Length: 189
Image (cartoon, rainbow, N blue to C red; front, side, top):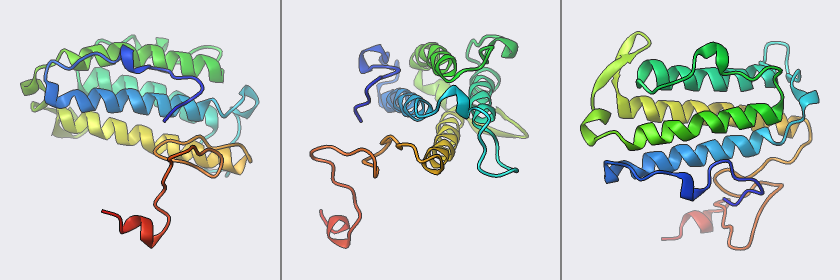
């Protein structure tokens, strides 16, 4: 995807010590860019928005994303992380949340890049179970995608453009985009 503002450009993604795991770093950086693109769709006036009384506010989700990533990387993966109290910007604003999200992601990429292949296969505590580190990283990426999608729905409910993440949206497309919305497209080999 090409975004007007890229949080982590390709040249800032380090090379993995275990080349077969480069895709994990590339995916984490790409997901960070996708999250930043969705967050940019909000204004500070939207931070209190929630589509239902039992839904989280935009601000709640931004805070959760920042704190949850810190916990996953620090507690479960052993990445050097700032104290939790220093993670969420104060006052919270959309621009400061995006900046902090990116600022925290860049050193995590370096941490992941330095790990040998065997490190990824070690089982570590994950809440009340144990999982391999590679599983924890992919779970983190999926958790991030979940909240990014949640906020994409909020944008649509606010009648705002939804940026592309894995392909075009009703609001953004480009030459060469080929979404699979028909049996014909799905049947291509």
